[in-house]
Length: 473
Ligand SMILES: [Zn+2]
Image 1 (cartoon, protein in one colour):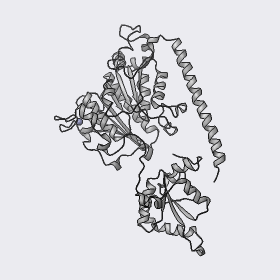
Image 2 (image 1 turned 90 degrees about the vertical axis):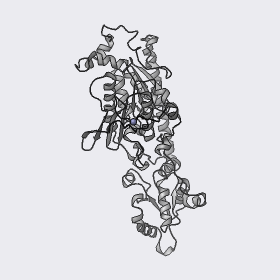
Image 3 (image 1 turned 90 degrees about the horizontal axis):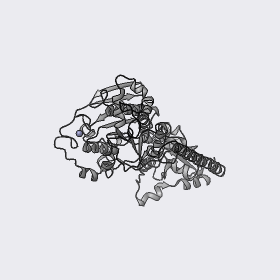
Image 4 (image 1 turned 120 degrees about the vertical axis):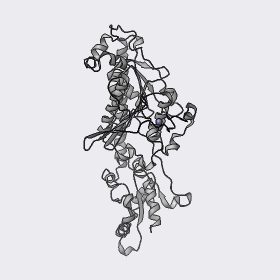
């Protein structure tokens, strides 16, 4: 299937159209913002600079004609369905308007959290994220629109929130939250929502909330399951009380590797927003000391009691060793043996000595095809990945069952060349990104296939360097 010339020209046109669409969207945004300014006094601008403090938000209520209960006529009308609730009412709404909440992560969890917190009228809403919107985010990260693909998630999320509620203050933190800046950023808010998806961030945010004495609403969603709880709130445990030592790296999966049903983070994010609203407004009973576990396939929700605060906890225990100074220099990635960012780590198993003989670039592999070299291409991804897309003619033998099926490779190699020729077929191995294929080649070389080679960078490299029409996922 050689359609390079045709497909690259086609792809260029598609890219140009997408670029123009983004520009059109930006111009329309600018027009609507300028139009809004015509109708609004300068001091009513909703956006706050990141350096400004959000604690004890009063500005929302100041400068507006408020009724005797402290709510402005617009607030009474806008939040009337809250005010009609006997268990919520004016007091809880005012508490919300005075609160400031930081949402860490503008992804699958952060999307519903930010949308609901903005619409329900928290006084100040901050969002931290350093990522950009990608097309494969949109099935679950419902705050972002197609026009923002390639743009900063924080900008997209804040624009969406501003479009819903111009009364609240919105703060963009277009940076990644690290031990070096977390104390400064989190200290500006009353309540923290952890909407990240990795283990080092989870420990870091919990530690920071303990140090600054902030309640933390923590959620997680992966595959078809999700869970949430509230840490460090009214004497409840912190994350370290429950998990003093990190689980083994293999147990920590991510959406980009394991997949996630889009609506699952949506459900958990909505529940996180609910917990944040309860903490901010003072109504109801939060999930402090309890964990909610959601199973999408059976539609089952369980709430389990979790361990209370540990007196031995190094963060919040009686002889806690954690200080702000120690926190700033603590290496959370080293502690958990996993990275904070979603970026893929490229393995390099082979020494320079065997590198040449054990690996081949996608382009060189394409040359071998063009030269009609007799070969077998083994795809070692799981079978459900192989069903998404595959290079035509490749054979699927997942890495997890490679050893017990190694004899089938022999037969495939024999079948690839005419018996009379006396020649042997080459063996190439491919996977999604070029990590598992190295593991497979290492195993094959030890098991009677010393000439096996893996394709560097896997199918992503194939799509990037050889066939741009080949889908990536
Ligand atoms: Zn603790």
